[in-house]
Length: 438
Ligand code: GDP
Ligand code: IMO
Ligand code: MG
Image (cartoon, rainbow, N blue to C red; front, side, top):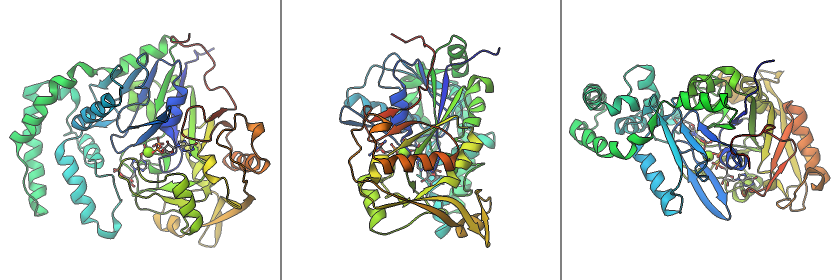
């Protein structure tokens, strides 16, 4: 029999902000390692611990437990200046004992990436993506173009200087062509040189660390950022991010073999939201969407933008479950829907007069997709302190059963509020003992 590993991937199943941070933190009890496997500080993972709210952008959600090794893997693009700022905010909030490691193969987000993100967005006019303007797209572009700077290169001053000089020369040509100010090598070089000694002790070959942890039977969580519909390959292109949040991306993004990922947990918001532009078949704007936005506090964790709101779209989540291989799903923010008379679930789309259950590749088709809904009755009773599935009002149970049926994956957890104790386990996610088990 092949060896069983103790790992779970945590994947956003819609357009991000499904509550991945909360669930990663919830599942991190007695685990050994949390690995962020893609994206950068475009993410905003908000975690509430004993009524205190923490916001993480690049840092994995295991940072609150000093026994957990937190890994920022090679698949991430990391802005070291923003990372140090994030750490200093955590320190002010009393989080100063932690274990954090950066992959030597991860790429660095440089100041020119942020400027380019802004320039490219502005040049697109009404077709803009609505990026977070953190330089994510341009940083991944440089990685693909093989001109990006990795952390291991940053440690080698001569090499860093050489690549940086070249890159700045080329970027300045772009800035000039857009009528923008040129940037100075000396300024950026000195700024980065200054912070090198603050981060060099964290830079290691994280692929070896994760591999060995899993081989030793330790419990590992892979924490995704964004969501599958923002995936560069399987999302609603071009209104996507520049990495792949799917669990299938983890082997490459972390440097481990495929068979080391045991379970894949899709984090599923009980309705839909999206920040940024792009098609959104179940979106609606009325008193009900305002109610959901207010109760769910649906404002971007990173940018503060109001999130667009829509009904639950089973086509999207089925798509995410297929490309990401969800073994289980967690339904989050269920409490937000309390008080609504009627709830809708999109089960298919009508596109060009034909019914389809799939998410089309064409942006035009997706923009024109008319959802086919099933309607269910809502519930009035407050569920934010419910401790078991059985205690839920009948209509909430029916809503969950309908989601399970239309998505086709078993619900293993429910989240009915931002705090850890507002989580209901339906199935145990980890089944073996890990190194940190007491
Ligand atoms: P992430 O990016 O997937 O980690 O999600 P965000 O942190 O951006 O957004 C989720 C928001 O919902 C955060 O403010 C969480 O504190 C909050 N949250 C998470 N789960 C629940 C839940 O079950 N109910 C409610 N009311 N809030 C939740
Ligand atoms: P978490 O991890 C929601 C969206 C942006 C934009 C698109 C591209 O908190 O779920 P980018 O800056 O990545 O080039 O922007 O992706 N986006 C997110 N939306 N949650 C996120 O992360 C997101 N990260 C990026 O709004 O539409
Ligand atoms: Mg978020």
